[in-house]
Image 1 (tube, rainbow, N blue to C red):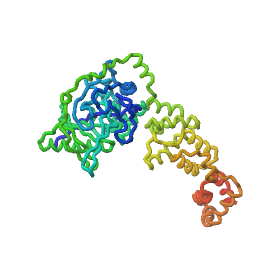
Image 2 (cartoon, rainbow, N blue to C red):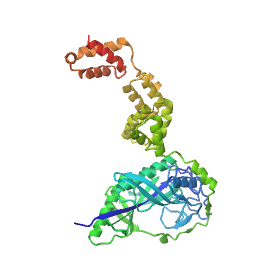
Image 3 (cartoon, rainbow, N blue to C red):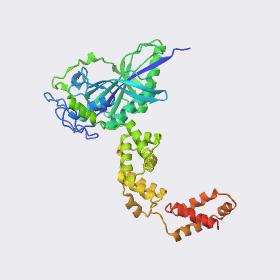
Image 4 (cartoon, helix red, strand yellow):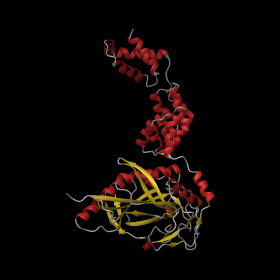
Length: 478
């Protein structure tokens, strides 16, 4: 029987903060602007340009630390991390090593194996570097400094994770909490949440940590899971062959599903850290810290409980609706207008999530207003529009935030209550499907649903189902 191995994983998660301006200057942080249009002497690293800390960055970092049960350093400072790279205009990065803003926290995760606490070693503030754009046609690299100076927090875990499932559960918990705090949108596809995976393997039962590698370029949960499995197998293979694992940074290629070395893994001493002389020591006032604590929003677990107790939702429904703070807030706004928790939840978990999946829309990017959704729900409840027609209206609302009342009027979708028109439709269907009528009269009750469907189709879903059911029953039983 071969050796059994255990995987040991720790993460460094970089999170772009949702401030309107950069960490040390007034340049915009808007995503997607033309390259090098959101820069100034400070974030472009001009000699003599002096940084000034954005107070909102500090506030967001402390809020995150409190939400993750961290100790807050009331005396904190910035350091210079010296390295040379084309997207790093100063040839150093302003970060925190000696006195990070938060330390010694934890996050609770849940997987198929049960609940577990993952310790957080520290959370520190730092500035982002620029971005290198590699042009394969011209075989050159271009530098965009728009991202240079965008504020980050780096959340460094202890090596407490043992599988890809635990890593994904940890990242999901981080993302949900940070989105509830509104400190970041955590969009992996836009790079506002990035994870570097530190991974080593050791013989099962051993207390010694193996040689670790760090994997970068991971911008989706799927890529992270693949990278973990791939690197675990690579390291075990080396050990089985009697070879040594080299401590290095590796780049994961999702298309090839393999990693390649980037550079030897540096230690803190290699960066020659020293306190930044341009930025003073930050001393946090207890009163200010108390205000940040007081302003922390209601988090997911509390909201789940509220939705169950106040609006009568099941635990499952409450769990689905609170998975995203944006969906939770939309539910709260809508249910205040409808007064019907279950109906509101059904619309958000049904048609809304179906169309979101089909069209690749995130909860924060939904276009329709809560007022319009509430109006549609109430019109369906009052029988002004059928469930079938309501779904048509909602599809238009989903794409353009159409006024449902106006859309129903303009497209003639209001419920038809004209008895002559309804009787004409029912009689026409009974005449067309004589054999089905005969089968019903011989005791095959299931045929009733078929005939009902044919009448509704004839009326293009605009007839009141109860009126049709009553009329159809009367005629079949004459």
